[in-house]
Amino acid sequence: MAEGPLAGVRVLDLTAVIMGPLSTQILGDLGADVITIEDRAGDTNRSMGPGPRPRMSGVSLNLLRNKRSVGLDLKDQRGRAAFLRIAESCDVVITNLRPGPLGRLDLTYDDVCEVRPDVIFCQAHGYPSDSDQADAPAYDDIIQSASGIGALFERQGHEPSLLPTLVADKVSGLTIANSVMAALFHRERTGDGQFVEIPMIDVMRSFVLVEHGAGAIPEPPLDTAGYRRILTPQRRPQQTADGWINVLPYTDAHYHALFRAGGRDDLLDDPRIATREARIENSDSLYAEVAAILQSRTTDEWLSFCAEEGVPSTRAATLDDLVDDLPLAEHPIAGQYRQIPPPVRFAETPATIRRHAPTAGQHGREILREAGYGVDELEALVDADVLFGSD
Image (cartoon, rainbow, N blue to C red; front, side, top):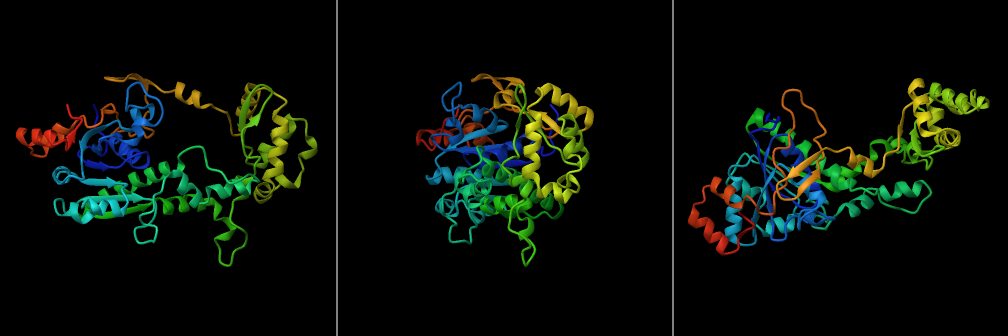
């Protein structure tokens, strides 16, 4: 099997739930050897929804792939010592433990640097470590609200709400992966590792304000924050005669084509479509006009029309549609499952799925043998219940 661009990089994964495990899944897909540390209950994502086996949810079948799992009691000094023995051979350590718990385990950046001076140590958590909220618990819901996601719904005329996807976890996970790769590039050039901190609130604040900073960014402000085209409640899939579609007229030519097709020649000279600024300013009313027109034909008819006229459009997919499009894979324990392919295509070093999701702690003995543990030392850890879940 072809090696990915991160082949030869070893990552020690001390994360749980979604944000951290997604980042290490990405690194694993790109070729890194990812060693994930799990507690006795196993990663939280193992129980997120139904699955074919206990502690093997549908979420975890993809999220834990390309990883080897070690079950360790890090509160025991022998477990901590084992962690650091593994860390000696690792290029990267990633954790989403808060500063307080990480300090109590004596597994901080400084602790890992004693055994691996050039390590890239990435610590991701809710709030900056130098803030008064450094140890505040933060999950996706909390960070969505703190970063203004709820306020976007309010601007649309609704009660504050949350996006029905773990956007803060996933955007932060992508940021972790990108940051680790940048740090690896720096180390490749200089030989120096470094500490990398990723506060979720900072990630999501910058994410939301890319477009929604808008007129509030200049000083003094020229307008309130919020990009109007995106905030209109009319920006949504539209109903056709037999289903749902999403049509996005972006230029005056797109609007002209749709207005003619809908028998609305009276709108062809409408000043609302005359310039880009006018179209943005009047998005709410223009999108309502388009939605009314789209009800006159079927989804297939509109898709064919839009393709001919160059108007951006798509059939509105359901979640089941997305899952049905995934390829089937065979897990040695869980059986068949739908595999989410790596989304990036490298011509020379393709991303690959080399390992199915492990059972919790499956590779403990294997990893510790690589770290130099002998048979008697391993059995002593097992007998003490410091190492668990290992074959």
